[in-house]
Image (cartoon, rainbow, N blue to C red):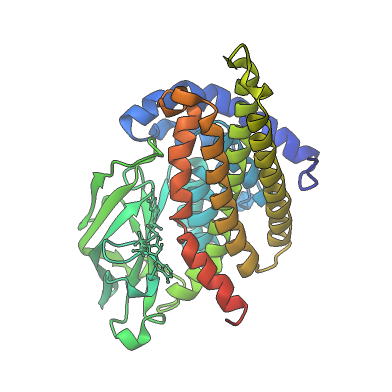
Amino acid sequence: MDRTLFDADHDAFRQTFRQFVDREIKPHQERWRDQGQVDREAWRKAGAQGFLCPWLDEKYGGAGADFLCSMIVMEELARAYESGFAMSLHSDIIVPYIHSFGNEEQKQRWLPGCASGEIVGAIAMTEPGTGSDLAAVTTSAVRDGDDWVINGSKTFISNGQLCDLVIVVAKTDPNPENAHKGISLFVVEAGRNGFTKGRRLQKMGMASQDTSELFFEDCRVPAANMIGIEGGGFLMLMQKLQQERLCVAIGGAAAAEQVLEDTIAYTKERKAFGKPISKFQNTQFKLVECLAKVEVGRAYIDKVVAGHISGKYLVKECSIAKFWITDMAQEVIDTCLQFFGGYGYMLEYPVTRAFMDSRVQRIYAGANEIMKVIVAKQLGL
Ligand SMILES: Cc1cc2nc3c(=O)[nH]c(=O)nc-3n(C[C@H](O)[C@H](O)[C@H](O)COP(=O)(O)OP(=O)(O)OC[C@H]3O[C@@H](n4cnc5c(N)ncnc54)[C@H](O)[C@@H]3O)c2cc1C
């Protein structure tokens, strides 16, 4: 299906990024999965070539391009079956908090490092006791002179081991009646006293992603590390979570497309009962159904992205994209995996890993049920 989102500059960017993926990512993927994280050096190389925060203004070290370049990065990583190199989380979810809500001093302090890959970012919302119900976080930040003192535990934090900077969601007002208005955002740099990185968690998929526990014990940060205003954290999160949901949907759509393409090729090669398995009517019907889902999803996501980059605040559409595309991607990948037979159960096959990687997309960035809660609210239900 023809896509109208991209111009010639975007196509050139995609070509350059594909070369980067072939040269700097593909040769290392197996080792990264074995070690449970991407090489730190890969982040610097990505930054040096302008692939981190490509949308960021040049005055902060970015390439001054747009979100579509970020979309290209997400799509090409998914097409390379690289689920652990969380460039999009860094560039399109974490850095925007600093860029949109940070003051000039904070932007000067952190953004150039984020663009160059010297600083890897993480965001710590989820806690062992709460994820979906963000207003119920218990990590606290108490003012003490010119500092804030943070205490609490976070879990499932992507880039948890590699991060040099983490945006911590904490309660600055413990009064439960002010649950939403009591949340603030703090930047905590790695190496601060009281901030420790816990276990790198063993996961079903995303083997090269260093998802971790983080602990804050009397961790002091200067008041100058608060992003935005005290008590404004929940509103900032709500505003930026639209793009986070969109990013997950973009990755899901591209993963489904790639798996389908590879499956079509495989079924033409693999023979059973004397003929390619693509010649069985069941194979044809299933793959055509997958293609229909992928193409419908592609049309929707591209339309939502077009609206998003034009500045529209698309709560309903981003939520629908997140749950529908990630559900669809998992169905498509599961259907495709079946055509690989026993090989579809072997870890050395990309389709097997795509199956395991895709499962989390229905859970993180807001569980798909939460997306439906949001849409229901939009409908006034
Ligand atoms: C690999 C991975 C990476 C992650 N990265 C990060 C990260 O970088 N930063 C971060 O802060 N978090 C991260 N998370 C956490 C993730 O966002 C949460 O796991 C997710 O929001 C769900 O929260 P929870 O696990 O506490 O589930 P819960 O909130 O306990 O919910 C469990 C289930 O209950 C159901 N449910 C809950 N509420 C409702 C409701 N209102 N209506 C209907 N059903 C409901 C849903 O089915 C939901 O899946 C990551 C998680 C994973 C697995």
